[in-house]
Length: 439
Image 1 (cartoon, rainbow, N blue to C red):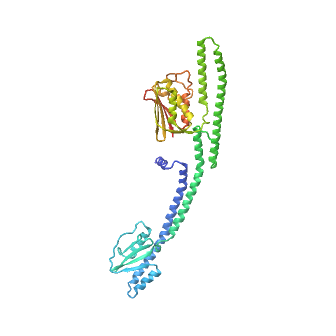
Image 2: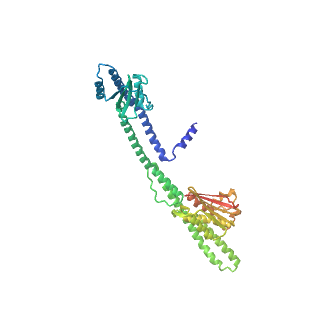
Image 3: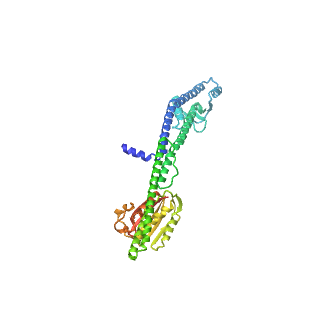
C-alpha cells in the first residue's frame, strides 16, 4: 500500500525542480491560511455575527411587542426605531403574507438569521431575503391581517472585519508567493544553465567559458563540470595531435617508397606494392577521420533534404533511388552529417546493387533510412559493427581496405546530435540503416 501511494504521488507531482520547490513553499502557506481562516470564522466572525443577529432579532421582537400596546402611538414608535436603531419599518395591512424560500442555506448570515428568528417567532410566520438588495436585508414578519416589512442594513448582522481580514491574509500570501517565484527562478536558473551546457558539450558543440553561479553546491557542481570539460578537451586535442604526428611521420616513408617503386623493373611487383601503399594511406586517412575533433564546428540551420539530394547526385549512380520529404530543416553540424551519410552510402554501394534512401518527418523527429539488397549483417553483429576497428570475417565487412571505422564514425556523429542509429533487415532482404534525429 505504501509503495502504491508512493508511485501515485510520483505520477501526480511535477517533474521539474522549480515546480516542486514552489509546492514546498506554497503548500504550507495555503495550509496556514486555511487553518487561520477556519479558526477566525469559528471563534470570532461567526460568534460576533451570532451576537449581532441575536440583538437585531431582539429589537424586532421588542418592536412588535410594544406595537401591540394600543396606548402607544404606532407612527411615533416606528419613527423612533427607524431613527435610533437604523430600521426601515413598514406595516402592510390587509396584505397576504407569502413565503418565497429565497434563503441561502450555505450562507453563514442566512443560517444565523434563520436560527435566531426560529427561536423568537412561530414557524412560517417570517421570511427574509439577503440577495435582492446589495446592502440591505428584506425581512418580513406576519402580523394580524398583514405583515411588517423590515429593511435592515447588512452591517447590522455582519462585521466588516471579515473583509479586512480576508484582504490582510490574502495580499501578504500573494506577495510571499511572488517573492518565492522570483527566488526559486534565480536558484533553478544556474541548474538549468549547467544542464544545457552539459547537453551541448555532450553533443560536441563548442562551449564558451562556463561561469558557475547560484548557491554554493551548484557553483561547486559547475566548477567540477568545467574542470571535466577542459580535461576531456585536452585529452581529445592530445590524441588528435599525436595521431596527426604519427600520420605525418608515416607519410614521409610512404612517399619515399612510392619514389623507389618507380625504379623497380618488375611491373607486377611494382603494381602490388603501389596498391599496398595506397591501402596504407587510406587507413591513415580513416584513423585521422575517426580521431578528428568535431568541437571546432558550430551548429547551423540547413535543409537536410537538399543536402541528401546533393550527396546522391554526387554519386551519379542509377542504382540509388530516393524518396525525400521536401524542406526538412535541421539545426546541426552540416559537414559531420555529410560525412555520416557518405560513410553509410559508401558502405551500402560496396556490398549491394541497389540502394534506396528515404527521408521522413514525424512530430518532432526526422527519420533517414538507407535500404539495400546486399548480403546484410547477422542480427547478432548489429551492435558490434558500431565498435571502432571491429571487422566481420565474412559477409559485408570482408574488405582489405577497410579498418572498421565507417559505421563507428557515423554512430558517433548521430549520437552527438542527440539521435539514434540502428540496423534492421531491409524490405529488399538486405540491410537497413535507420537514423532518427530530434528537430
